[in-house]
Amino acid sequence: MDNAKIREAARHLNQSQSLVVLTGAGVSAESGVPTFRDALTGLWAQFDPQQLATPAAFEANPKLVWDWYEYRRDLVSKVKPNAGHYAIAELEDMLPQVVVITQNIDGLHQAAGSSDVITLHGDITRHKCYANCKGDPTLIDIRKLKWGHEAGPPHCPYCDAFVRPDVVWFTERLPVDALDRAFAVSAKADVMLIVGTSGVVQPAAQMPYRAKRFNGGYLIDVNPDQDALTPIIDLHLDAPSGEILPQVIRAMRTSA
Ligand code: BV8
Image (cartoon, rainbow, N blue to C red; front, side):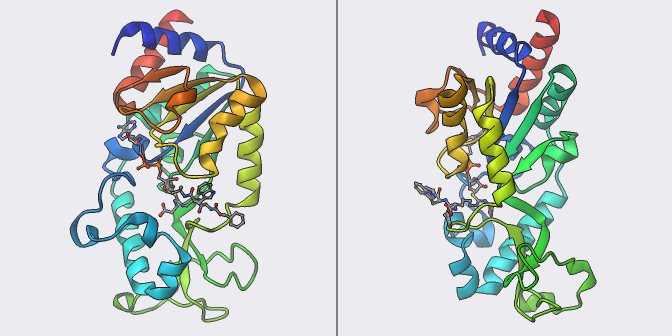
């Protein structure tokens, strides 16, 4: 990676008064969490994640979708944040405002020490009643439930509906508070650091456009590949985030 681009990123970040970091699956790739682009492996290889992550799939085959999330929840419980997550957390000690907006449900930003994280698509470690019988979300602690795991999802202790992961499935509305705050901070961002997203899934992919349109925000994209946001990006750091973000932090400290 040419150092001039790293110094340019450091210069803009050091001047930021209202930084927003937008992340996707790519920031967790170096921790061993497959991205949505990565074809599913093993017994999941035959499935398309966008088909499995839907209410329709859960209604059609609750055990299949439940087992897929149990597989992912087990995988996530065994991985650690990588240097990219820690670099993003470190920005909080260096800048007046750092808000992380993530599409990821793995909790790795929080585990790395980021204190202000907006989880747009929920959290794989949480569960709720499929009918939200006591309001959305009707959270349920599955550790307190006794059920035959091989039979698929447990049932809600209040209304007997199925229990599901507290994540946002395709065609479902995002949590209103999280989405409203994400829209608000994005519209005030003077710099947006975009890390590991293909920029395809809506409404998350609207955040960089809001920063650019409402505040002339400077957009830095960290992604080894081009993505759907490339046309509006000001600076593209085409390298893995776990490798390049620690270098950007060092450049910020040396040029501060
Ligand atoms: C909704 C949780 C409506 C579950 C997820 C407008 C136009 C077109 C379509 C739509 C539209 N509006 C809505 C839609 C439909 C849909 C949508 O966007 N479809 C897409 C496919 C076109 N959106 C929805 O359904 C949303 N809901 O709109 O509701 C509504 C509105 C009002 C009232 C009622 C209903 C809900 C969307 C959320 C779905 N849930 N996740 C789970 O995880 O199981 S989305 C899920 O997929 C992730 O959270 C993430 O958002 C997305 C995957 O994208 P990325 O994170 O970007 O990952 P990806 O694998 O694609 O790319 C990884 C990138 O990283 C790559 O570019 C790669 O190069 C890069 N990379 C790899 N390694 C590294 C790296 N980068 C850096 N370092 C590395 N080491």
